[in-house]
View 1 (cartoon, protein in one colour):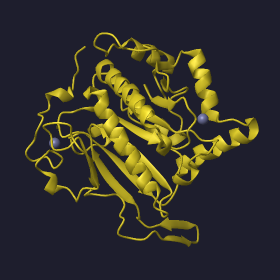
View 2 (tube, protein in one colour; view 1 turned 120 degrees about the vertical axis):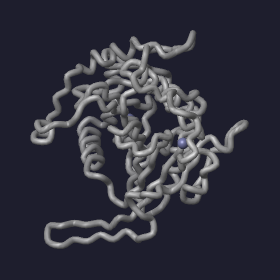
View 3 (cartoon, protein in one colour; view 1 turned 30 degrees about the horizontal axis):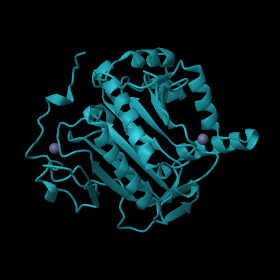
View 4 (cartoon, protein in one colour; view 1 turned 180 degrees about the vertical axis):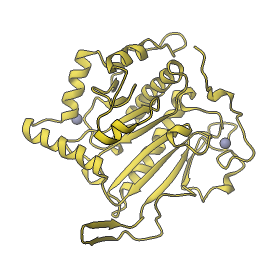
Length: 316
Ligand SMILES: [Zn+2]
Ligand SMILES: [Zn+2]
């Protein structure tokens, strides 16, 4: 199937791109790198964001004045360059390379979570201008903050309420039901399931859940990283081919740092193609008009073939 905005049409190297090899000096000093196997200087690089949203140069300070609560801009904001190849869209990378990126995600997630001033770590990717990407070279980002965002706090609160009432993880229960019902499942392996979101706010919003209960992304094992790489890459490829390389975001939605091992929360990856614009009704009401039923989206994505030959696995 043709794509309108094929990432493959980008050149592999752009002399002026700060994320391309030989331009390492144009980025802030490196935090870590995943070494390359052959012929390339590195496979994945991490460094502080030059245009960071938060700064580790200041100490976190909270302030309450009348009704106004403030926290200063303390935090860590890092860039993870997915590959030395300027044209290496994650959907088209080998699974093994995606596993290297996810391994770096885990390393940085756990390192930043260890800082006692940090309470929450968000890992995310912006793919395309409509998803917020300002540089074409494929990269991901990680922002560590001293506060737990209100959206995360709400999710945690609801999960705890369910746990208190029912005595089990809300997400494990939901995943079990979704896997049994099948209608919203896009693909499934022994360790992960990718599925359309029930009552999704936007078309093709897809979540990937680990089948093993884990509150924090930092608890992921090496075997799970390999499997998640395969599931995430296949899902991104299905979206790339089936929806013609839309702009998209994905985020790792993990429990905050202090909730590692919690029985009531369960991390997942959220993949959101940017196919629609939020308009007045959504802003005014908080209700979203979604013109694609999740069940129809799942059926469509299940039907998009992205595997060459055998090895598609279950749930295809
Ligand atoms: Zn580049
Ligand atoms: Zn669970």
